[in-house]
Image (cartoon, rainbow, N blue to C red; front, side, top):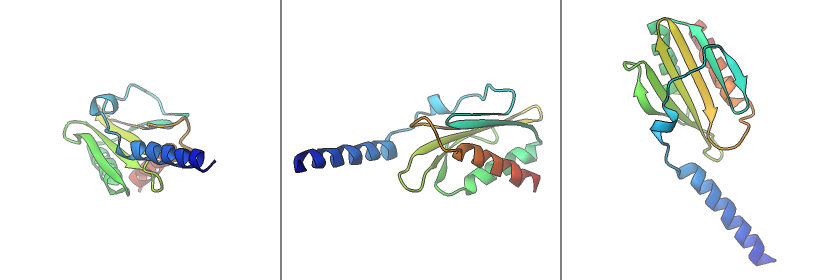
Length: 134
């Protein structure tokens, strides 16, 4: 019985290690935001709003100020930047892409592992929009 318990513990630790250390492929996550309307879905959300270039820069600054967040790929100069934000407890990665073109800001936040993010990505985007509105 102890052997089985030890194996289960090792499997959990290995799984959590993989989640925290798995490489993030920029080619998979740093992609154009195709959606044209705001929407919520299992594991993420999209927000599409009218914005200025200054709003885009402010949105990027908001993302960069979030704890456990770093740039995966892109830049504001390029018009698209993708961030990884990791959960505090286990380091689960969420990806947020900000894209700006022709007076429209698109923000797409989604999870990598699992099926539900318990609304975390939607809340992140709502916080971003609230910060832009001042």
